[in-house]
Length: 356
Image 1: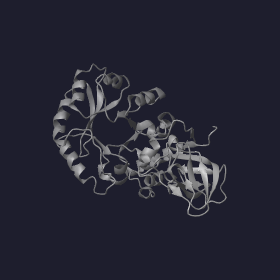
Image 2: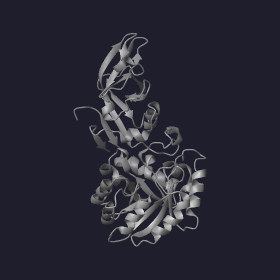
Image 3: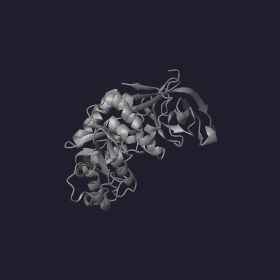
Image 4: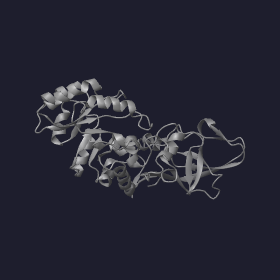
């Protein structure tokens, strides 16, 4: 690697975080969510570290097929279901579980020629108003699907918009109970936040995502500090240049930072083309040789500038952690006005990835 930036993925941390999930929801089976290429970590790289899960949940048919071809034989759930009627042939061939959220999908299941019935997750709109049937529609939908020869096991599925809030499940759970009235059915409701903080919503299957990768569903690291969750991805680079500023000197594009006195700064080989947020402002935390400091000025395509005043011994070649164990990805995301999910998923293909 000629350029010093690298993302490190810790397999043991993944295994540990799955164990934390099981401890939080001991009576539930676990769908490990690996959508968006395992939240930027790479499905091909990490799935075996999560092989003790009960199933994988994702979006893309291609990712599901990859898991099957890699040797995964247990369940795979398509969280958004199928997008075209002909997708049912692949669901049949690779024995996938699909969500159903629209009437056209029921019609497609009715007409499909399948080798065996498929397992179905019926999606309830519990108030988020993305995908799903309204509660008053669910009983009729359930009965229509139940009558189809192409349908095997059925599960009721919902998603929560505000599970980070202690009161955030009250109204959604009312919707779900309305939808489930009269149905003796397994349920899969809990996302990461509900898995950690709402045991009343665990039921048969939980669907953790962000917590498997060691970040907080609320965007606040302190919310998960006591859980023992460990960061899986660490993004590091090195200082490749040093500048000595005088009072009034500007830094970076647009001179978004000016030195108020003499100041030593470092130039780091990491920029927005690597997936670091371009909109991260002056003051976003980084760590240099274990010493916490901050970014200065605008993030460039390939570089960023950082304050070396807190770490006077740092120089060319000093190690810089952009996020990981010392600098939590949630803290970087919060400073940049985004969430850890986005930073993980935005890791650029040009960044080398090491598995440890």
